[in-house]
Image (cartoon, rainbow, N blue to C red):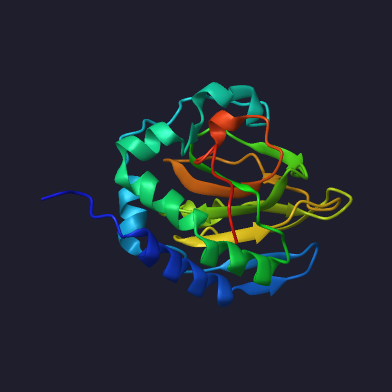
Length: 223
């Protein structure tokens, strides 16, 4: 018996497309989309049981770039070693998924690259309010948090004055999408993390210099 079971890319893509079509559009303080039931449950399980130890960073400086060496991106090596990484990356690379992103989010996906990161945040991690760089065509955070306090582990949202304006839901298998822009401030306020805050960040990126972070460095998306 092969464990965990990993759905095929077309199954992953079909459920994700349905979630994206049913997404809730929010316009304040900036445009974003809220999704539920994003991935098949079996895929979530396969991600959660990946034999990847959470980095024990302690207190951080409010950024992720300062510990790039400890981050986990879906790379060709991970795709080779773990079927869940391969099938998820193939699903995100599909033209039908890219077209749905274009239709719902108003982006241009052709010629971009899939960048996918598996995050396992532990106590001491926080993120200062920041905006994504324009090379990220969109950002999507998928919450895979479990435990009694996980509901409070969503992304914090700020207005254009960097004043706290709300928090995304961190319901299991939910997601938030937004496009980089001048007012898209977001972060993660300092608060206790009892356990591990697990999530995926998915981007389509353009002109990305850190090619070692890409799922298919030599294969741009075709629409």
